[in-house]
Image (cartoon, rainbow over all chains, first blue to last red; front, side, top):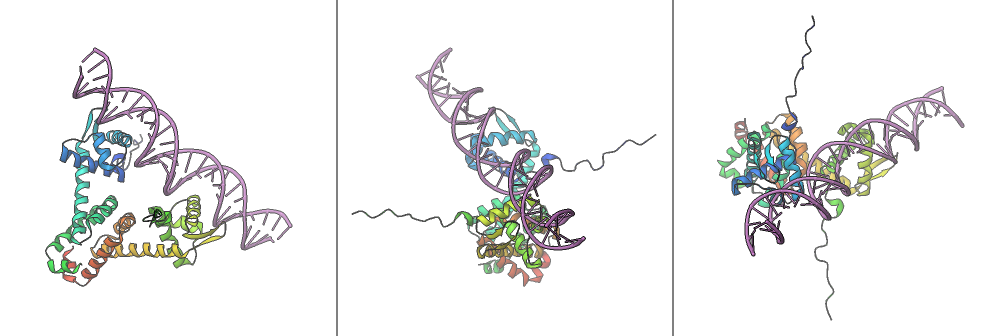
Length: 148
Length: 148
DNA sequence: TAACTAACTTAGTCATGCCTAAATTGGAAC
DNA sequence: GTTCCAATTTAGGCATGACTAAGTTAGTTA
């Protein structure tokens, strides 16, 4: 009697768990819209990200397929628990990076540009390191003064 | 007699001057290969970047078109002055970011991954700020010790 | 309830940057 | 000089994520 074959190491990462930069941008903005306006329609997302409504419809359908939000044609969308958790993490990362660069005296416009580019490529451990550094810097005004 | 119309602010950025992440990756690696092996063939670049030779041929032809290197079919390539200058700047940025994260105690593997992702999105002014910060940190062992 | 219109969806296209498979080139060895 | 073969190029394709144009939906207003 042979042992049954066993699936070793069943994908620790599901398809949905590795999100692209575009997916992260959408989720981040959707959460922000919901927090400020109370809702996020296709047209709101499109305006906010400065892309076409058609592109947003496509992506929103995809995010629904990935279980990050619930979407009903013509009716609107809400983030799922998974989607909201992910969006919050993305937003937090964005905020931490912004705070860090602010501390260094980088110009606001440049901060926005750079953070939007960088944020999708920063690992949790790097983020933690920057968080720690930021905290330490905040209590060293003398050092901060030297950074300009 | 009317004044002639004048073109104000003639594009400070030529087409070639805004390089994509892919272009930067290629230039960076080509310079590195030339510095270590003395040359950079299509096959070397392909192996080093872990992409196909066909893709490298395409990109190399494009970089030639953009004036960043001189390429002769089947014969090889050399960086132009513009290409080498750009490549050096990219390499320097890469090094600065690596040094910075090293100082924070981030794991080498993570540094490599994150720097490769981030480097294409960092403005000169942000880079300068990080450079200054790194220099200051280097002379504060007590503070550095706290970052772990 | 019929028309209007903002919001939305569908269909088809494009650029980037990668791929594989199938030629082609040219230097080395015979 | 032929043959061989590693390096290279060409041709054709694919995924992502954007676009425009054209058609659909549904809430509002007359």
